[in-house]
Length: 290
Image (cartoon, rainbow, N blue to C red; front, side, top):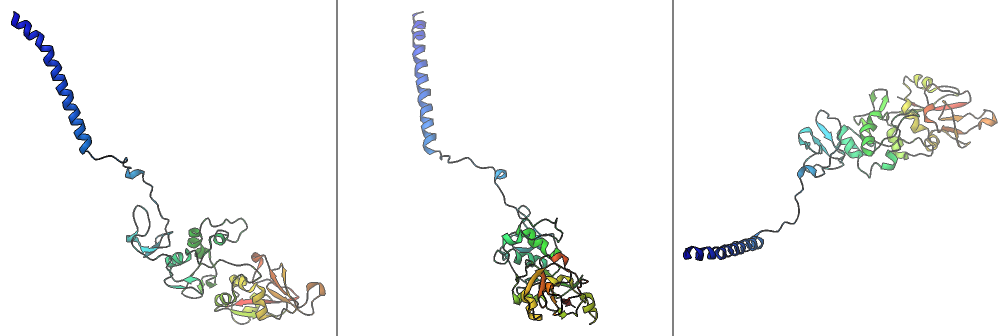
């Protein structure tokens, strides 16, 4: 009985010793883990949350695609996630382009070349109307301008669907200014293949061109509707004046009434009124024939 009581008194002491031993082991283990474990610097970002840039591209042609970064590649070289051209393709390539005409023989390289900021100014491109009607909208970006410009461009054709040359796609920004917005060299180049004919008094351009076995080319009036150009073909001794009329560009004949400014060359600021069938009894028209 006395032995049992002795063991009973010793039991709580053994439990306390065991608790101290467990606590000491835990602390040692914790210190070991803290000493040899690598520190955590940040939380890993989920790949799905990372932002990825995407490209806009031209509608796939027979062989090539151009993206809005100004790169040209084939369909197999398009990144399936970003839709951009992969690899080290040249940006803003003008391969197959005539930089004097600002025209190209390939639509995709036309877009690439047009996207070059040194060739197309954004502030001018976004102010170009998509079509002639007064209600027409503007291009929202240089990419929209470059991809849409040649589809709405009439400056590369002679008569409706007859191309002037192999350079079908042109990206020059149109100028309807009377002060010669396009340079004289560019104007002459863009008039290649066009016969500029001075009509007789009261004669329409349809009649002028038909008399020489040709047709009037209405989309070239914008190049003739400039004082600089008219001075090359007409005397304009009465000056160069703004007017409104379907018979322009034209020169007023010398024997016209004084209030009509005899001898003056007339241009119109409203390009939409220019037409091949316009005429006036006191003017001689400047006509584009081909």
